[in-house]
Image (cartoon, rainbow, N blue to C red):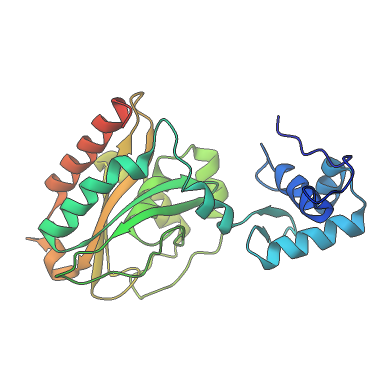
Length: 262
């Protein structure tokens, strides 16, 4: 269990406000969200201090607050920082050379992403210098759950309870092609699991499409997705995704690297 010691005397190496802010962040370990009272109890700080620290962390993107429940959860900045931490299954490092080849050979933008607490986070993005550059999904950023290939694909492989939790969110209507009917979304997710890929056409931006396939760890669990995006005409062939075979081969290469430890 992570603990931040707030009883040490302040010194030139120990800034009290920073120590308290770290205690607030550490209080979220093992918890998806907390109320103000729960953070106060976990840190041992008084309610006013805890609220001020949370507001400061919110202003910097380290913490966000749900408008409905008023509960707090860790923010996008921490996901961005976490994406830079290597581990034994470093999906980003394993995918990077594969993504570079995909983007260059197919003149598309490639992405590798993973599922984190209800969001699908982009770990890396590679543009082809000769083709179109798709900028709709930045590194460290996430897309609404109901649009894009990778977000829908990775949501489809979550446990039923997690899917239902996410489906309670308000869907985004980015284009006329964005699916906002939750019952239809459930059917879409079931179909994605059956075919083991997702092809999203014009639902994030008109004229652009994305194709995503899962990446699995040595135990067969889906740990992320590799996807490509480009102009719809270059992504479709005879009404089907044009580069599905190549993308599945790319996923298999990444999985082999993960199995070998990099």
